[in-house]
Amino acid sequence: GAVVSQHPSRVICKSGTSVKIECRSLDFQATTMFWYRQFPKQSLMLMATSNEGSKATYEQGVEKDKFLINHASLTLSTLTVTSAHPEDSSFYICSARDTFRVGFSYEQYFGPGTRLTVT
Amino acid sequence: SQKIEQNSEALNIQEGKTATLTCNYTNYSPAYLQWYRQDPGRGPVFLLLIRENEKEKRKERLKVTFDTTLKQSLFHITASQPADSATYLCALDKAGNNRKLIWGLGTSLAVNP
Image 1 (cartoon, rainbow over the protein chains, first blue to last red):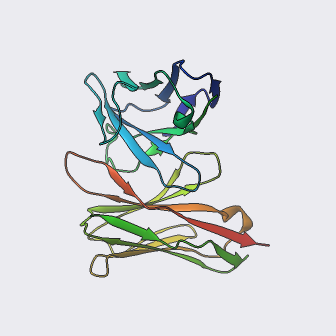
Image 2 (cartoon, helix red, strand yellow):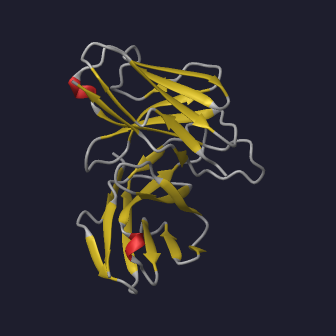
Image 3 (cartoon, each protein chain N blue to C red):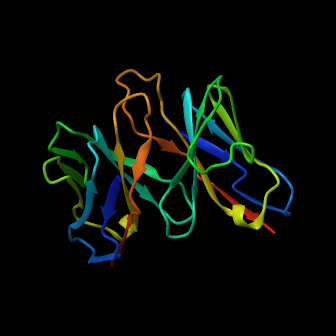
């Protein structure tokens, strides 16, 4: 149980275009999902917290107009990188908590990640 | 500022030995501490969670200790196997409405056959 999927796993796009990444909780519902980015040999950096039915909460220094987050249902959150530039190339990972489970615990379940390369 | 430190250097051990990884933190009072495993090019996988009022937690060959006085957690893998080779991340969780995890850089473990 507690499986999170991400799509696509890899994407290459040209500078100036937009890319959408989907994050789905497959066997549980999540009111909250998290979006991270990770550069090589660095730790996870939280970009934003995605809340179902409301606006995302962005971390300091993350441009909300550039990284658009939509959490339209309890099983789906999307991250759109708008007008992508080479410096946006990174590994993007989403995670979710199973907030409705009885005896709920606070671990996060991560997707497999999306490798974005902007040329 | 809040800081989490994990063994910065890679840990190399022989198969069958016990691997011990360290997570130290400062300027923080976590309600929970979590350990994750991350393989190259993959998202982290949850391993164990320990609460501030727990001293030790076990799961199969894994053991986590949590010393809130020392502000330290130790993560042990007994009877280590080459398949245990990965990066292990420590994350702190503060109870409350803002449920963000604070992440360490991770420690790379290599178990040699």
